Amino acid sequence: MIKPCTLQDVSALQHIASKTFVDTFGKDNTAEDMKKHVETAYHLDKLSRELQEDQSQYYFLMVDDGVAGYLKLNWGTAQSEEMGEQTLEIQCLYVDVAFKRQGYGKQMMDFAISKAKELGKTSVWLGVWERNTAAIAFYQSVGFEQNGAHSFWVGDDEQIDWIMEKKV
Image (cartoon, rainbow, N blue to C red; front, side):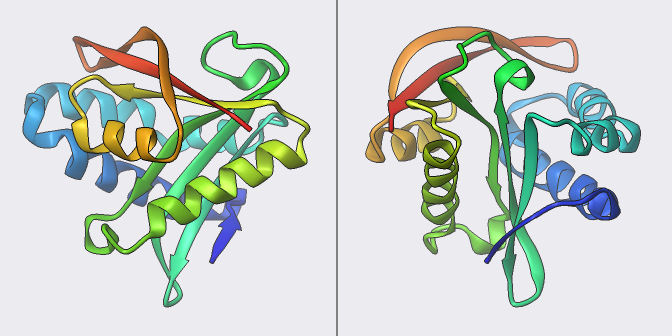
């Protein structure tokens, strides 16, 4: 089940966001850069502000009454890049390592695409680290194509994210 996050969920959101980011990228980054990123990106005050943004929504993936992943969607001016009013950004789509390879990523992707259609958007886009080959393969398998790149900072390390887009 996928359910919207509320302000009351901020601590659970901080936990799943921090855990899944470290699990996904910890082995490829320094401990110092990971610590800086997690402390900044997933600070309770920052997440609380984001949970109150009108053009953004966090969702939890729930499995057996526990949080197994999360999704963050942005549209309008809340998008991390100016992609236009007809686009929806999937800023985050993470599944906890214990629940990977069970179809939950596809379930969240389908949910995001249905939300884009519901909002009258014509395409969905996301940024994915150029070295995250598993995620790139997944996004390509569901119809995303690379159409650009941008910088993404993990601590003091500038990394390149591919911008991938799919028409809906």
